Length: 116
Length: 113
Image 1: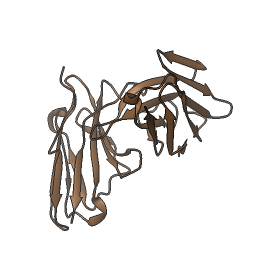
Image 2: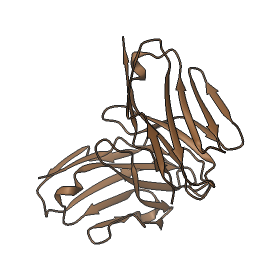
Image 3: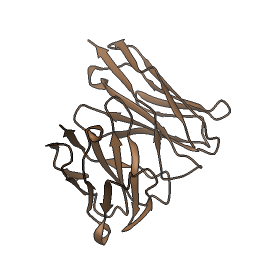
């Protein structure tokens, strides 16, 4: 069974440019998460989806970040415009049903963003 | 909100020795405690978890212990091997069985052969 797929794996852009990350969760997983991981830190939740509904986006900087999960499967996270401080790894994870809080979260390999 | 602190930040052990990583949490309502292992260039992977109705759980060379009174839990790895070298993260959900996890800052484990 395929795991969580993310693309691209690496992205280098100049500041003020837009960037988008794509995630395909494990088939059948209703809950999808986007995390930000700074160097030497643990993942920090940006947004959580239950199917196509964003149920927790309190940590998402909405002035420049946006996300969508059309049809409750794939998801895209966008930054526009990117700033130097956005350089980090963006992780996507999925779980069967996040409403049952102890479900295992499966992580993708992440997208490493470098903003110059 | 939940605050998770993890110690030590780095740990070096000789192959075959044991390694222990400790985490403390602040929200007494938390009752699910997973441990993740992250290798270079990969996403975190769950290696073991424990729920608040038990005090200890073991899976081969890995064990987790939980002290709800003191609000801390620990990861124990016995007979360490070079492939155990990685970054380990603990996590806890705020407000009980929430599906939002707050992660510790991580522990870099190096197993020297």
